[in-house]
Image (cartoon, rainbow, N blue to C red):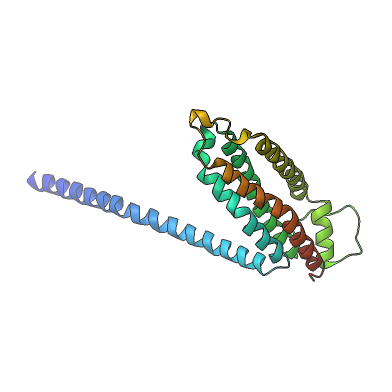
Amino acid sequence: MAAVLCGGISKLCQGGCECVGHICLLPSKICGACCEGLGQCCKESRRLVARCCSSRFSCHISVTCILNLPPIILGLSDLPNAIDGCAGSLWLLIFWLLSLVHIVAAFYMAYAVEKDDSILPQTGFQRTAVGGANRMWKLFCYDYWMAAYILIACGYVTWLVLGGAWYAMGSGNMDDDSGSCHEDIMQRVEIAYGFGWAFIFLGGCGLCCSMCCGVCVN
């Protein structure tokens, strides 16, 4: 009887120890899996960025990132005031989202033009252009994502014009009396506004240069 009880207690203790061991190892297993997934994600991201930055669209990517990162930083730093209803901060909120779309679109264009087995749609007829010229044609004439981006770009210009009108009327800090606006909100809007128009002109030049280079892709 005592032997049976001791054997049962021994098995129970052994099972408990194994269970505790599995529980203790669980965080390390989860951490290892997360690190492995994160490492793979970083590896693929690095490969994508390296490929895009070495592509014919690297000029457009550089100009787009340089001129759109400052508005994004300004918009994110003023996000709490936008939630509180500050008009200038709300304008920055929409503006930095549009700026983020420009950066994503720049990398997408580089990836689409450089990729031989392209993600671009097949056209209904044959084009005499080959290689990069053919992919450029598909990108700007048949790609649905590119069509959506063109509409967003038109909205970007419209938002800039509206921002200029609001700024001229002094509406950017109209909620300043309630304390929802930062004291330098108008300066932030001015900086973002300047970068926005600079991107329209310089970004357009960079896009044209990249398109000319993209035609030469084999």
